[in-house]
Length: 179
Ligand code: HEM
Image (cartoon, rainbow, N blue to C red; front, top):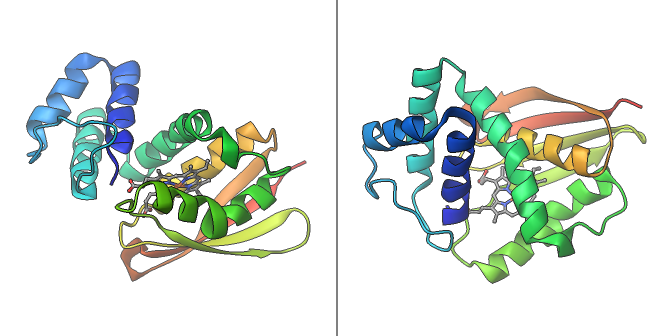
């Protein structure tokens, strides 16, 4: 997983909970890196899970909620870094380009990036079913990214997990436009 995912996570933890919490999760999560990341480096996604689990334990917030909150914030980071991918007119057409355009472009820039795959099916104008597939089991992070994207496109939505298979490697996410 790219370093930017780690550096921004620690940034958000500091902003929300203070530097003491950053120090605590870094020192108590048994990290091979010791919690030192550079934005361009690549690190095991297991370190992210260790830190999220530790944060969950310390703050009493469920892991899926933390991943979703972080995903929503991380969308803002991506939008700032990659404005060229935000030219789509609407939320659904944007979400439909991730798997066949955005993530493949990300892979060209960073051949060692680890990305999920998605398939999408529209159900009328106001409903989209997105199937997330990744051995990293980060569907809740995806749901947060989707919520971040909905704010960017100024579209009110409801996001729900419909089914979960293979211990979270394959997850169906339903997105309904509310207005
Ligand atoms: C501007 C648009 C986007 C860009 C540039 C982008 C790029 C990236 C990058 C750089 C990573 C980290 C890869 C790594 O750590 O090796 C990533 C991971 C990920 N992206 Fe995207 N992304 C975008 C939008 C989205 C959206 C809207 C979703 C949700 C549907 C999404 C779902 C994910 C997930 C879930 C991961 C974590 C890795 C995994 O689950 O296997 N991305 N993306």
